[in-house]
Length: 325
Image (tube, rainbow, N blue to C red; front, top):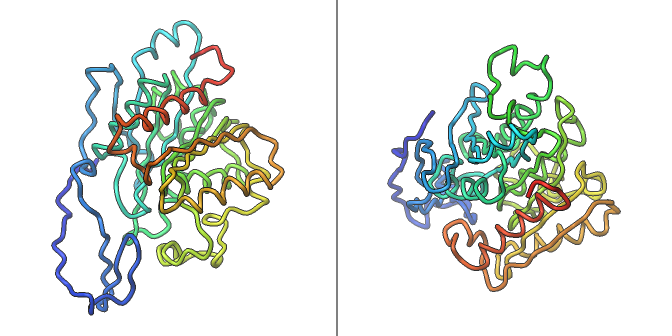
């Protein structure tokens, strides 16, 4: 696994050197792309270490030659399994505008570990290739990760033949109760994975019960996204502007959306919610507004009262109507 944080480059250029300017990056005359990563301490990668306060176990695994994942197991897993109960799965795609952060970062390790402790789930947080080195890989790699999870439900799948299965998934995970979630770009990836679930299905008869969209990144003719994804179908690519057909046929029972009141992406989130309502989808939609909060405030301000509301609502969403909460 790569936990290095030594790829920090000192950028020295002027406004005259910029030929394209976007929210997350600048394109320079010489072709270089400068990602405007603030390099905050929370974005630094760290190796997996079990959480001594909550008892959550954490480890990293390789899913393929290019995709890894950070896995999380709650302290109740053994007792639940002994009682004949498997745990829901939270498959979580990190945010960062497709060009920053990692599931190995301080912030996302803390976030997902806290979710596992509170929600009593098995969690899988995949790595994915970032722009500009790997344009579009965020969708492909995340899908590889989700299929890997589902493959544990098929004893004849390649994960067992090739020895890439993991005992935490095989022993503790209820593959009929998968929840896919993410924040910002990770929520966008969540939507894209649901398109794949519908079009291709998941191996092993795995089932997505619900999706969790935190401050989602969508848009219509979003020039930044088009620049980051050179292989696209135009300004209304359904990965960025969800189509009515995709939303009407979401292969899950429930959707939970969080919208921050003063998020610069709030209009896109509102449009996503309205599009689901108008699509004719027959599932249950829950929408929560984070009053007076900005985009992804909860990542760093995890003790904020609105961040706690996010946690409480996700827990209730996962365990809604179930006896395992």
